[in-house]
Amino acid sequence: MQFATIEPIAARPDLGAITDDEAAALARATVNLFRAWKLTDIEARTLLGEMAQRTWARWKAGEIGRIDRDLRARMAILMGIHKSLRYLFTDPARGYAWIRKPNEAFDGHSALDIMMRGEMTDLIGLRAYLDAERSAW
Image (cartoon, rainbow, N blue to C red; front, side, top):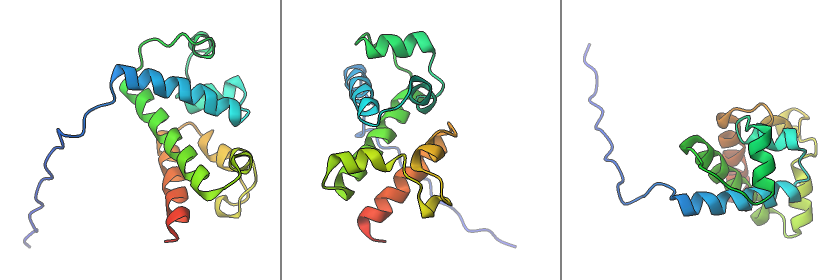
């Protein structure tokens, strides 16, 4: 039996990593988004990968410290979810409320229920679902 050769995909050095300044801006935007979504502190901390309570309190007070790569990725995905909702709903309030509403596509669970499982793959899956809805795939 012979296997096909898989060609490696070249790295994309032209796509830079999220800078510290960009990460701080993402953090501020995330705090604002979570206020719009009316998340509890526990919900917010879970979506941010089980962030420490003291760290979350500092973020809400505007004191953003060092942000690791995992957290940068989580916030970028959350902003993608927000962006998709803004495209799908012309009324921002409907998009903000949608995350708590039961959804047939999620067996009656809400998008927040899915995200609260805490895995980054759940965030990625929700983002992919919304992108597909937006694209009418």
